[in-house]
Image 1 (cartoon, helix red, strand yellow):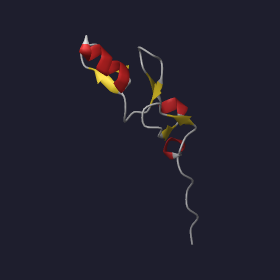
Image 2 (spheres, one colour):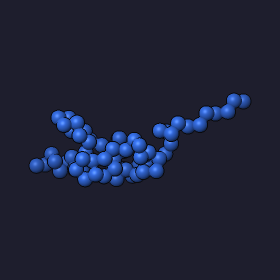
Image 3 (tube, helix red, strand yellow):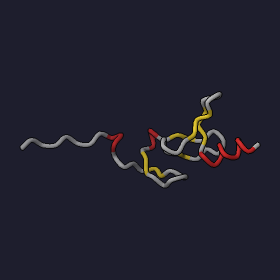
Image 4 (cartoon, helix red, strand yellow):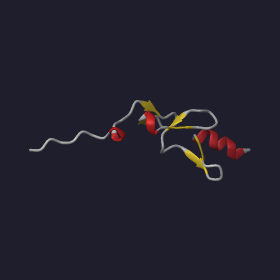
Length: 66
């Protein structure tokens, strides 16, 4: 029986934790909010379409209220 190849680094659980959903992610793949500098996973981040800047959902919602 052939040995199974090790899992690639980008598929491992990771050491960082998303501040929104608490999902773990790898530091190299994480995105940081331009307003509050919180680490956000790629599933929770919101990209403002005009400026293409990443926001956490909390900061994006407060920007939209203004």
